Image (cartoon, rainbow, N blue to C red; front, side, top):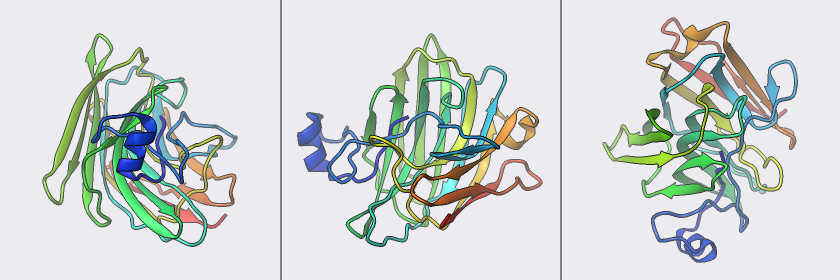
Length: 243
């Protein structure tokens, strides 16, 4: 999963040689993106927080979230919110979501999709803090995947079909600190609220015991911790803290 941190569309299009509207991610002038979970111990990771289901074939994952507003200081920092298949115990990830980054003290928001290890792509959808977003990734067979993202607040939507030799070995709903030559600082997003989280058409929280809660211990001193699920087993929050 490779995702990003800042994006200047015209600059990125020129530097990556990509057509406008399909732009590789860029953070402070360098390419960056999502990557598979970097596991530590005791349910922690340096780059992921949220929930991952595993231990069986997964063909679909979906979830909704309210885009957090990031609080920016002098440090460039990044945060991604996404749903995806694979990546928890494999070297591929099929995913899409939104981004909230801090660049030179200012917040930047955008949407993206990625079929890791291939690079990520910008989605031409305006991302606004406080808006609701719903994302889904579905295996269509013969290596094809359908990816869709909807701004629930405005009704704007995006969908695409991509092909990748992938395993479908996990399904996850995640807040991530993207990577660029290493894991980047995690932007202060406060609280990310996820709802309607499902995998294979079932409540994500119902996959216990083959469901791992993941706490991020970011190498730059930030921490990101998931709550438990509510009674629906579909809704949970992720909380940012300063270490």
